[in-house]
Amino acid sequence: MAIMEISNLKKSYGDLEVLKQISFDVNKNDVVAVIGPSGSGKSTMLRSLVHLEQIQGGSVTICGDHLVQDGVYSKPKEIKQITSKMGMVFQHFNLFPHLTVKQNLELAPKMAKKESTAQIEAKSKELLEKIGLADRTNAYPANLSGGQKQRVAIARALMMNPEILLFDEPTSALDPELTGEVLKVMKDLAEEHMTMIVVTHEMGFAKEVANRVIFMDNGEIVESAHPDEFFNNPQFDRTKAFLYRNF
Ligand code: ADP
Ligand code: MG
Image (cartoon, rainbow, N blue to C red; front, side, top):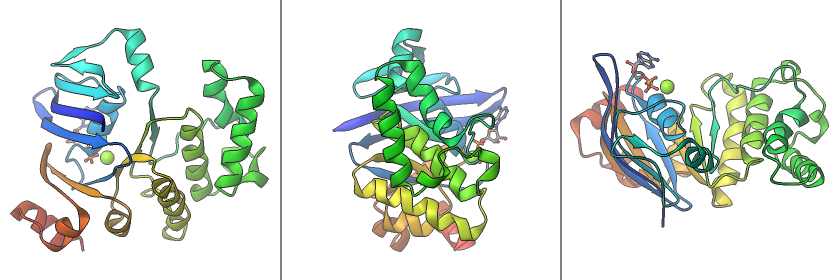
């Protein structure tokens, strides 16, 4: 079942075409790894899917509802309802610095008022235990390591019960020794059948955890395949050159 259907996405900044006819579907339980050189449009694509950027053409459908259809956006109320099905994790964590770990997790669900305070607090406690940070509940972000911050950011995204989680280079800002603990949390989520799109340079993660790899270059999807096929038998010269340069 397609959770996300993306067709012919187009976006430009002035004369610069950043996304050119991007199309792909994401099915339930998919883990899609998106790789590609810097500047190829990976972040712009993710940000467009969660409506942090406006696109100029194409369609995005989430769980059967149109965020945007042929370049025409749905009404703000519908957009809000549709984007609430997605969680996003950023390279630089984007935690609220003046709030504790617990407050970071509970702010959005408390504002949404869809669950009782007791339910929200029980969930934040459970998630902090799950990511191994129960002992940091009342810490402020400044007093956490980068790996801990990113685990908190993932837990915060999970608080809203998303249908799909989007990650934009979640380990790129971390010291190498801290990437493992974040990748482990993501791998556990994949094993629990969370649907995810992950922009990453971690080829080990793409090989082991993803069931599809998408290679973007210059605003286009050049190649999309199962990781076994993608890494062992890439079909296109641009993919081969990228893999050769980077690994
Ligand atoms: P990636 O995430 O693959 O590195 P980006 O999506 O960040 O690529 O950027 C794609 C292209 O769009 C780059 O050429 C970048 O310079 C340009 N770009 C990104 N954001 C903006 C912006 N807000 N204004 C103008 N150009 C932008
Ligand atoms: Mg980027």
